[in-house]
Each structure stands twice: as C-alpha cells, then as structure tokens.
Length: 431
Image (cartoon, rainbow, N blue to C red; front, side):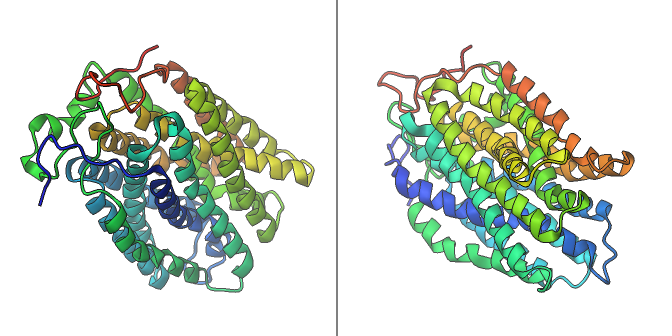
C-alpha cells in the first residue's frame, strides 16, 4: 500500500546506506574496468582480429548504453522510489555480464557490452541519489564520496584479478564475476526505501504513485532543471560531466594498453591500473573532507587540473615510483573528479529532483563516455607518437576545470533545512 501524500518518510541511516552503495558500485567498477584489464588479451585473440580501433569501439559501445540507463533510472528513481529501479538494474547488469562471458563472436560480445553499459549507467545515479538521501548534511560530500569510491575499488579488484590470471586464462572467464550483483537484489529490496524520503523541512515524501503523481512532481522535472532557477547550473553540470567522463572512460579503456605501448609488459601495466584506482579512492576521500568545509568547487577544479598534470607526467620516461605516483594522481583526477561532480549535483538539488538531475547530468554527459575511448584511439592513430594518447586527456581536463569554475558556488542551505523553508527545497545556488 502506498503511503499517503504528505507523510514524512524516515530517512535511511547513513552508515548502512553508504555501505550498500559502496558494495554496489564496487561491483559496477569491476564491470566498468574489466574491458581495460582484458584489452591486451583481446588484441591477441586468435579469431576475433581485434585492433586498437576495435578496442576503442568496444569501449564506446559500453558507454553508448549508459545515457539510456542513466536518464531512465534517474527519472524513475524520483517517480517510483529508488528501490524498484535499483533492483531491476542489478538484475540487468548481471545478465549482461553473463552474456559477455559466453559470447562466441566479436559482434555478440560488443552487443553485450552495450547492454552492460545500460546497467552501469542506471546504477550510478540511483546509488548516488540513495546515499545522498541518507547522508548527514555535515558529512554529505564525505559519505556520498565514500560510496562512489566503490567504482575505483572495483577497478582495483579488476587489476588484481587480471594480473593474477591473465594471459593464462580465457579473458571471458573474468566476466563471470559480474553475475555477483544478483546476490544483492534481496538486500536492496529490504534496505532501500520504496519512496523518496525527504529531510525535515524539505517537504513531504513523494508517494509511489507512478503516473498518478502530481504533474509538478513527475512530468515536469526536466522542465524544472532547464527553468530559470536551475538552467545555468544544469548546463554547466552536463558539460563538466562530459569532460570528466571523457577522461574516466578513455583511461579505463586505454590506460593498460598505453602503458604496454610505452614498453611495459602486461603485469606492469596492470600495476599502473591498480595505482590509478588506489589514487582515486584516497584522493576522493581526502577531497570530500575538504569539500565538506565549503570548498567543493575548489576541490573539483583542483582535481581536474591534477588529471592534466598526471597524464603529462605519465607520458615521459620517469623512475618507476614516480610513474606509479602519477598514475595514482591520474586516478584521482579522473574517477575522483567525477565523484565530486556527482556530489555537487546531488547537493544542488532537493530530494525529489535529485535522481532526475543526476540521471540527466550523467546521461547527457555520457556522450563524453561514448566519445572518450574512440577519441583517445583516434589521437593515438593520427599522431605518430607514443605520448599522444596521454596528451589526449589534457584538453578535457583543462576544459572541465574551466566549466566548474563557472558554476555557482556550493554555498547553499544544508539538506536538512530549518523549519519554514520552502516545501520543495528549491533554494538556488548562490555565487
């Protein structure tokens, strides 16, 4: 039975919400980075005739499904509650990874990567919105950021597994681990609220009434995002997400292969991939602590710039410890930056608009994820230099820093507003 309109729903506790979000995104990070880990093995496949351009296309196919998943899931999460869309997305992702493991042709494998992308695209806005709903206002960036480090932790797991079993094992075996999300379906159904909970002062929880919801709360969410109040920040968030995802998905697809091209063996390239993700975890947590002190905008700008510096460093011959450190900084500049942008989006919108805002930000920004792998591949092919692939990341990193600099600052009221605040919580960002 659906709750009556106007009923205040208990907000989920931050600790369990962060833990569940961390586990889900860890599995999702594995699914995301698996293509990069098996990239060198794919290039050596005796029957599929995979080229560097093909590898870039596979990465783009994965990213191509993400906008569909992000937009649909973000909107559905606000309208129907987080629980049902999250459960469906977990089951979808498991099925897609299983199909990848048994794919017998390159064409079928590419199709399964598209389906995997839809599942990945759906879960990120849903999990981010769910954890943001539960987060303590004073620790919002840290708690949401902690959950989003699951993507990087999943990447670390991918690197460790890949280094341990490749090239001895058939690379498709690694995709079987992607079926694990099925185990989380009953956990999600039990822990995730069936409605979108509001913090005190933000207005009543939105009932799960589907199409019967009030027009202002269902059909006009995109109109609100593009209305006078949110238009500027919405467009800037979309563009900043585009830049960030060019870096994230370009690096996740190409980092191990770029390292191999620069003279490192498969084992060494996977060590760099692990360092990349460790840096993302540590950097995101550190930046989130700073962001909770009112410096979310500054932290995000600095992380974009660090991505550019790190990629330039990686392109040149350096002592091994410095290269590992630069790879860690690049991980923070890529995954950590996008985590901060997602925190920014979640913090900038009230609960009943949060999923839609995240879904469209990630959905429209996913064009960068689609472009990223092919963009890096094109630069590497057109410019006859081993360093070209690394320099390809500098342009979107600097562009992202400039776009975030144009955003209104994050100085807005806390998520738990005092009594008397407007019901919708529509307090615009201020400069």
